[in-house]
Image 1 (cartoon, rainbow, N blue to C red):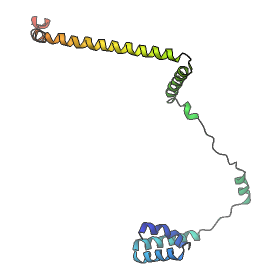
Image 2 (image 1 turned 135 degrees about the vertical axis):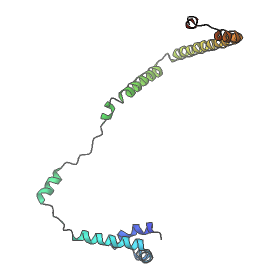
Image 3 (image 1 turned 45 degrees about the horizontal axis):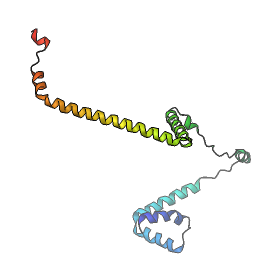
Image 4 (image 1 turned 90 degrees about the vertical axis):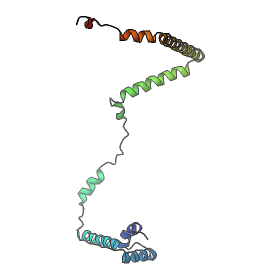
Length: 163
């Protein structure tokens, strides 16, 4: 057996709680392993030292007072929801739940779907037109590229003329 497995048996071995087979395994391993036999001797010393400590009897009056202490289970608290850091998240969640419930419970849901679909298509067509304009502008400017670069290189600035 490995030392880790034997270490689990050392405490029951000291207390004579092992059966004959387990006891024999531990004794065979201890004879061969100085590490485990040293650990067992430390455990024996600790056990002997603990046995020398006298037990203290608890007074009956202390026992009565201890038994009078109510055994209350901790109440679940939702105070963490009042933290300022969570308030924006809770507000956003409240608004989202309200909008979803108003939408899902609305009898005119089909009209709302048509309206939203229409607005999405309008926005999409506007984006397409902007993209087309930008593309045509770049094509137009590409024809004037040489002229624009030549003009920029040959600009005489106001402060250069006064020097």
